[in-house]
Length: 175
Length: 168
Image (tube, rainbow over all chains, first blue to last red; front, top):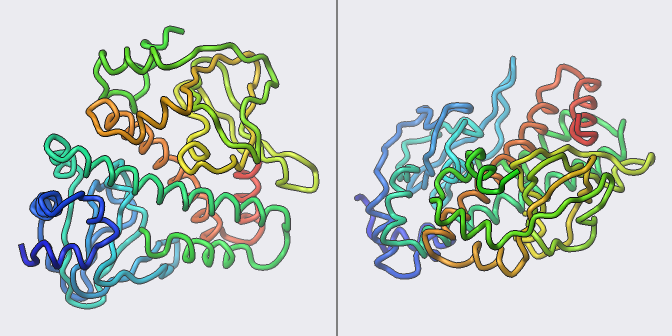
């Protein structure tokens, strides 16, 4: 592995804090695989089936969504960020396309590897499940609230642009 | 319908063993709800997690439009109701009411908290059930936003929003 436990903890504190102790953090780190990507590489494509959670160790990437005739840039993910949280909880279509802006290093935690940690690190995996679930609820509630509010003021401006801005603000870096 | 049989028909519960399903079944109370009964109110917090055993549940938002309430969606047997409010300990954003005669199995808040917060094989499997439903909810709302973003014109975008809010 290219990074040690201390670096892993300092880069991803919001996730590693759920590991309970260094042994848990080390186990989580040993469950991930290293991935080096070059500028321009697509790490994951929107709609592609995946169960992976990605940790960005180094570099910078862009998240985007594909329409019929256009690609909309949603946000950036940099070192210390993660993406595809939702896929780790329930494998399925990737929510966005993620492309490397520069040569980058990523750690990949597969759904299977995460499940493999359950036997010996039940508290850690339980904490992570709850953390990811809380994140999803927050995003769902915020989105629904905004959608309800917007529906009350129908006809007020460019709805497509409004949806794009809303998606970016709520989910752009949370692919 | 037998609750245990229902569990077996729901993919989300497929990881739970028979013993775990027995434990969950014992913690739940099955009750009939008449047509139109509101069992979770907007602005009040959920005290139970509800599993739809038979019938349907309408999810209603009371302030969506000048015309009054809007039915956001209709939920069916096997789906869980009340999750967001239970987990966040915040008031519900919507009302939930029986559509026709409906049978619900309810799990009290104390039992829910125990299953959701503790760390054991049983609770872990339960947390996975919850997570999968939340992922479904998340994909649903992001699909709405995507549908609006990539609509061909404003009219179509309005239609996507309207269909989501009205549960079409």
